[in-house]
Length: 113
Image (tube, rainbow, N blue to C red; front, top):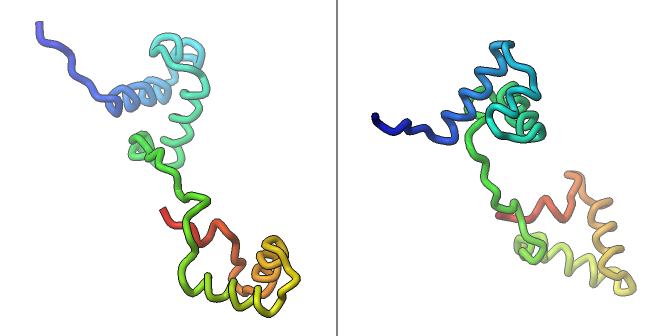
């Protein structure tokens, strides 16, 4: 007898298809498939929101890093603002740049990754 080969994506698609058939309760389907209810919720929401491609594995890579340096033009703006306001610390400089920006500048908007 040949082995049944199935990928994680095949298992997720089968699971969501069983859910959509309406023949299973949430509790029974989770017990049958050996998954937790939060995982069930995650897969169902992803399928409803993104279609079948939403069940693919998502990257777990962080979107940014706190020590990523800002782009050179932003660094120049920070230095210029700090020289104009020598008594300001980092929080006031950041708040001042946010208020002066028309684009809703925030620290997380310049992180790369």
